[in-house]
Every structure is written in C-alpha cells, then in structure tokens.
Image 1 (cartoon, rainbow, N blue to C red):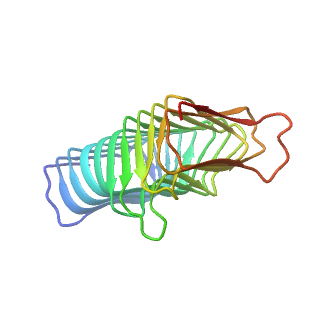
Image 2 (spheres, rainbow, N blue to C red):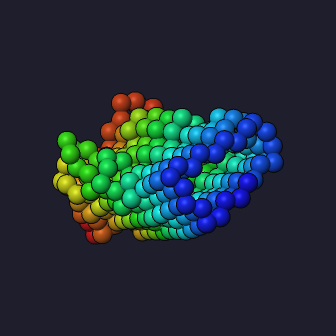
Length: 281
C-alpha cells in the first residue's frame, strides 16, 4: 500500500498478521495517523515528508522488519509493540510534544534516533515506560536535541525511563545530544541489568532548577560509561547502582552541578565499583 500526497482528516490503517507487507506514506498530512495490526513479519513501513498531529504504531509484534520515519513533523509519535530482529530509524524529525515507547521493547533489534528535535511543554519529551532493551539490542540517540519546559510540581523529564530493563549485551547509547528539562536524563525504576551498558559521549545535560536532576540513574548490574566529553549544567547528579557487573566510570568535566552523589543499598561491591572523577568542575 502506497499513499502519496494525501490530505486526510483521519488516517487509520490495519495490517493483518502475516509476512511481506509494505506500507509507504509520503508527502501526506493528517491530524491523526494510526497503524495497527497483529504479528507482523518481514514488513517494510515508511513515513517520509509528512505532517501529522498524532502518529501511532499499535502492533502486537514486529519481526524481521524495518520501520523508518524521517523528514516529517509530528506532534506525538507513539510506538507500542515488541520488536524482534527489526531495525527502526527515526531521523530528521521535528516533534512538538512527545515520543512515547511502551508496552513492548527491543529484542535483538536496533533503534536509532538521529537528528531528532523534540521541543516539548509536556511532562515527558521522550517517554520509555515498560519498554525493555534486551538480547543484544541497541537504542541510540545521536546528534539530537530533547527539551521540555514543563516544571509543574517538581517534575518534567526530557528523557524518562521507567521499568526499563537493559541487559543481555544490550546498550543505550547517547552521543552529541543536548538534553534539557527540570530533569534531564531520568531513569526511574531503571534496571541496568547484567550485560547492559549505558554509554554517553559528547552530550550536554542542562537542568532548569537546582533541585532537579540533570542525570539520575537507578539500576542493578550492568555498566555506566560516561566520560569527560559530556557536560552538565545546573541540577543534580545521582547514581543509585547496586551490584554493578563491571567497573563503572562517571566523569564530570567542566560541569556545574548543585549536588552529586552515589547511593547504594547493597554491599555487593567486592568486585566492581563506580568511580566519580571531577575535572574542572
């Protein structure tokens, strides 16, 4: 199915369970676009040069497929599915409310956000809730800008992860990205499990309050690799990391923060630890 230069008041597409489907949406405009379906295998889904208020992918599962959204303007982008052996690419996007990923995750899959701008006034600009990254998967946020101006009630997160398990050789990578909000990168109920990696390079985290967190990481196991190429401006840095499975390094170089702490409730640190370095900060 190919849709080109379509203007619709509502766009709803259903893909039945099966293999070999192709869906292309190009140069289209609609207040709402919904792609729903069952267990999808070997599918190709593409959205390009389009404008939508809400774009939703509500699929039971997606396997051995590709999903690309690029060069488009979307208010809210929602992904709800279990992606297996699948490549997802979001690039050159302008988001004015939120990207939401929930009720599923990546399994042996790769997802890339490149050159994505999220400028939001809502509580969460990029929201991952119960969206696990496992079995050698990678979620990369590259050369992007994620900001929210929401600060009501001591909340508002630029990038928010809740009940997200990163394990089994999987990685969350951030490179060359600007993050700004009452809380910047906030991982609540986050489990950096055994074999999981949080890798951060050349990124800037800016808090909008002395009491917010430019970086908050909670987890058990895994590895944190945050070197001196990153910068933190205002806000707090807090790591709660029990029983790390590898040595961890967090460097604050040329940064200004209101509070920095490492907390742990477990004594299982006999083999691996987390080391803070403060350079020109």
